[in-house]
Image 1 (tube, rainbow, N blue to C red):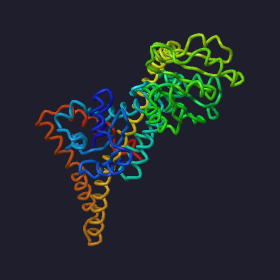
Image 2: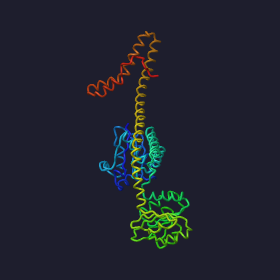
Image 3: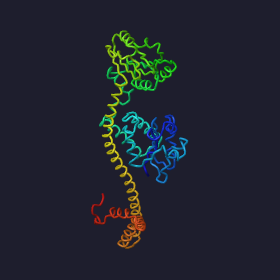
Image 4: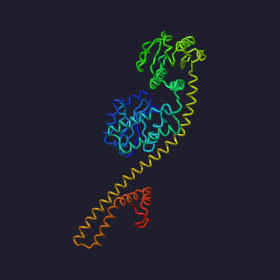
Length: 425
């Protein structure tokens, strides 16, 4: 049965399509069970994040499109219309894709670390839902190991490429820790919100948001358990800020050097880290000349981001080779498993035939028949039973001119070994 990866991502579908195919966390377990209940799905793991929805499964070779159709139906799309957004990868290609996802090589931000935790959560849900099997379990365990190895060996996640994230990294370099720090965000746009999310994840003491519209500031503050203020209140709260990030649409600076000088005086020269990511600038450039004030502009952060992006791409090139080695190792294991299943069926057939014929021969000998004649007949019958299926298939192959199968049979049933030579234990 083939191993498939079927899904969509930021590379193949716009946001409005990804939204239709995505599954909320509260619905995840039920959807995995529904997927696994499909008659042609033997194993299944569902991965659903903001940038991708994918199913990794073992399915019947007679119905390879069942997962594709299930995803299309869930999204309210026809199978044909969904095809332009959904991809289907088989066996080694599916394995390589998952390993690249786990390593951050297929992410919107190259090398981002969050995806590995999201994959582990998906694995856990599938395991608890009873949808996990031997192959998908081993697949995801190997994906986790590959993702961890790629990050430790290449350092692909060591270079942040988001301006907002770089702001948090620089803040940690200045203060060492952020748990006791207050962060003041000026503005309420997308970049400010992203900075707020990163600082909130770092466990800061408090988040303050100042904006021209108090209602917008309050909506953002509610997301991060912060406090909202208007720009008219800004000078009064500046002394509270250990870290300040500003991004408004103002045509002139909203934070003067004099206001920062006054804030530093009230802070008794405790350092302030200021990030101005607005164009035009929100903070007067003279602030950089003040003692205990560390001012960075959008150009400063963008330069770091560009340098780090180059480093990440270099790391990604090294990571690809690591992924390929892991794919080869997994496929060797998978082929071994499938060969083992075939060998077990073949051996089981031979053993059952042997036991049945041995019992019949023993009864015949006890009944007084000539032992040599009985054993000869048993050997002929056993040979016929074991070779009947392969003989029939080889005749059909010859009639159909399937020379690949005939050559494989010559190799598999190599008659150059004498009976008893190199017999398996």
